Amino acid sequence: MLPAGADPLARYDRHYAISGTTATGIFLRSETGEGKVAFVATERDLPFVADGGCGVVEVRLNLKSKVWERPFCHGP
Image 1: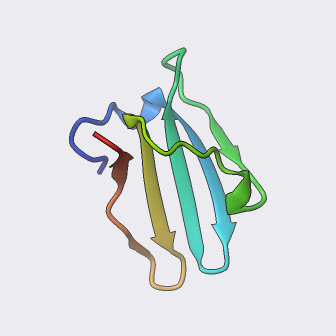
Image 2 (image 1 turned 180 degrees about the vertical axis):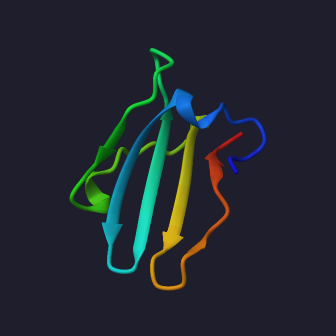
């Protein structure tokens, strides 16, 4: 479930990377409204946005325990 204030998942371009036992996703609100999915080699290759409110959502999954950390928006 995305945080309050976020758009529906399909409206985000979703970028994923796996590092060790963690999968990280950075979701950026799509300018076209049609979210695309991309996988990158490392977390360093993920888009970096320090702010952006719910235009940028971050999620993490512990691959060992299969537990999702709570998704969060990047700023107010």
